[in-house]
Image (tube, rainbow, N blue to C red):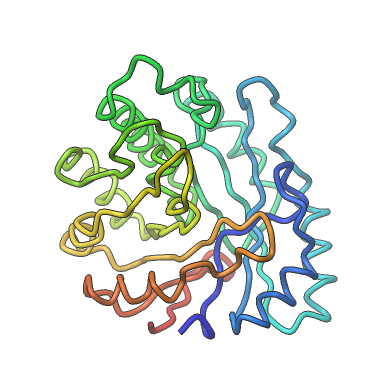
Length: 268
């Protein structure tokens, strides 16, 4: 099943936390039978502690993508992952206005100026408070900044959490999730299943609540993308087959990738 899919969320060496070479990714994707790879390197303007770390020159990135694509056995697409914060929306809009991409992923990486990756975000917060605040910011950002194609890893906040329950569960956050889903559906945006979230970390493996997907579909959501969030070639297409089986059980029949900001549908 993985053989006809595009991995829509990956990070090349243009991201500061990745060393994956594009040519290496292309060969690995071909060996897996993937149809293509979208390179969505990080743009997190006004990131806590270092505003320049999570930024890159899209012109240089795209030049390398096009050069690599000439010899690539799979299709390669241009992309970017923008990290949304209330303080950087105008700067991001201006930055993106100078470039064209196949795919723009919008994600939330920082909450109230704090990086959950460092762990301190969770201090003195209950599970519901920590997850809920993250979703509140996400709902605000999706409404305030509609210039994207895919909502990245809606459950990123569970990756590094110290709690026993490492999942965004629909029944705990139904109202705010419905708000996010309706915004995506109305705007023609895709909801991402990011397989990097469901890896063993900090003593537990996060899990995806299927009620999330069922409710998204019930509200009329049809656009779903699959992204490995790979920072190394060995993780490309990770758990795509299992994700497709899960999606089919929830009533979905296809996934999407984006070309020139337009959805392309692949039957699963």
